[in-house]
Length: 238
Image (tube, rainbow, N blue to C red; front, top):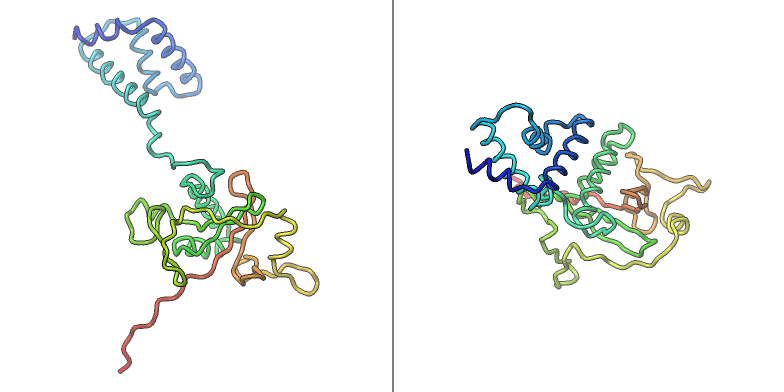
């Protein structure tokens, strides 16, 4: 195919050399089947060319152009925002990964299940007292499946306040160091030992909620949650 061959010839030597070098690196790492690897193999093949090769080459060029325009094949799947921003989808994704990791351990499985239920119900609170920020966690899987549950684009209205509040808003809290905050919030017995619930979570002595303190990403956070309210019994007594 003359048009495909001409399209290859108009590529600058610099672009072709870059494709070849990147493909060589991929090959050393066991990734010779990548688009760049296949492209370089065609550009620098010692054998003859035929119509099937030209068709495949045209397809590879199209794929590379599409990936360049989208920033890579996985760019559209990346959650928005930065992990350091607790209001972002990126942070909520890492939060979900943390809960999943806790659920994988028999020692913390029950606690993780309670945290997951609270996340889905909108009762899981994330606090960073060093930064003075607090937010309610949200379940991104519900956002992607189009569920009726609260998502990052939904609006929550409190019972005591009829004004709408976006659940991506960060609530300012008083800044503190973690030692002081945990001393003031984690419930202890008369001997100074932390009191834990049956699921290994701590007890927040200020609110009575279950709590967990640990790292999400590279930062420490304090998670607290209440059990989702049970649905009212609407059965009719005979």
